[in-house]
Image (tube, rainbow, N blue to C red):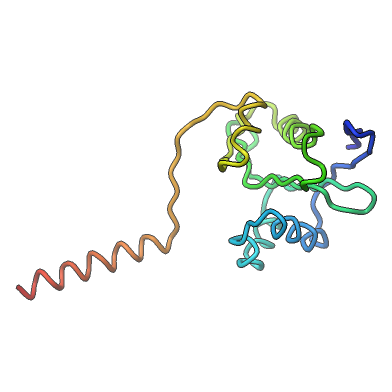
Amino acid sequence: MKLTLKNEKSVVIRPYNEYDFKDINRLNIDEGWTNLVEKNEDTKKAWSNSNVAFIVKTDDRVVGCIRGLTDGFISLYICELIIHKDYRRMSLGNELLKFVHSLYPKTRMELLANSTSRSFYEEQGFRTFSGFRKTYEEYKEKDEKNENKSTMESRR
């Protein structure tokens, strides 16, 4: 899909290909998303295994990307949306969200925001909701704490 931005530059939204990953990783670095950079191989696999994965290019340069997961009917979860800082405030983020949502019009779009992106999503009409997060490692940590606590109690 081709778009013309507010600055009259044209961009193309197209599906992600594996050779795009180094450009996506550069966007992650520029954005300070160190967790995704440190887990480079896992992040690459996440992009390859996501059923929503698009990049935005202009002049042979990746200037944005979006990755998500969907069942196609109820939920469309956006995992990552990055627009290069030089291309913000040109409606590109909103157009990218609308484009992806148009592919799955029956779904509700859900995403997480940080303190920087929260105002952007509110401006686009997204409603806030509550959620929870836990890694598998946190189960192990909790089990170890409980095990240590039980050991200490049995010694009394």
